[in-house]
Length: 287
Image (cartoon, rainbow, N blue to C red):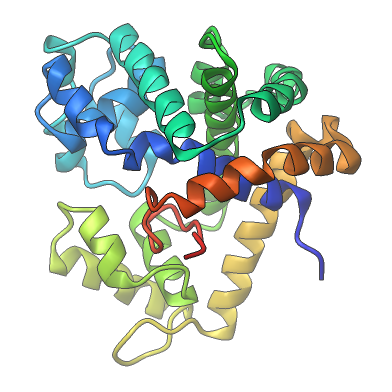
């Protein structure tokens, strides 16, 4: 079975977007802004298009983070810097990271020209992070513009993914465990990346999934056939809604053109060592 074009586009765009988390300059730039460290920078930069929001709506739209972890960053970040300053900083750092990794500015610029109208016309219904990002002015320069468009479309897909999980009655914490059970990343990786949840929280989420027949009984995380079917359904629905909600305007030929334009830059970022081989985004980064 061929991979859905929406998923292939996600893998390329996610690779380029993710420099905003893993570039070495991210933490240092956040601290220079007055933010306390990586996690305050992460929440402030990613939430900045929403404005000076408190923790609660970010807990809701990011999905899967412990409320206390978010509350340690927001709204305190807004007493140290502004959303606009965060929007500008993340764009500068991300464009520089793409350039330093060897991304091709000309090809990225052509891809941005193709993707920009698609993002602008995509359906915002029930997609708050997408809607906030698509309203932003594009940064100057082809790498900055491409990074913001990649981010906008990434959040469009992510909002749709959360909706698919809600439809199946899966919480953010439970979703982490299902993805770990599928082999997308290990439980240890996601527990390190989603601090704040206690051992009892993780165990309770696993018990709820076992009660629904989605994980097997016993040690470790193993999907049942029903668990695999549910996860496959969520992923398929995520692809379908990302496509029908916006990316279909490209058409399959347009998607192939964008992928061809971005392939050298994606390979450059993946080969730079900037992104961890195993990471909580679920992105598979080739060694």
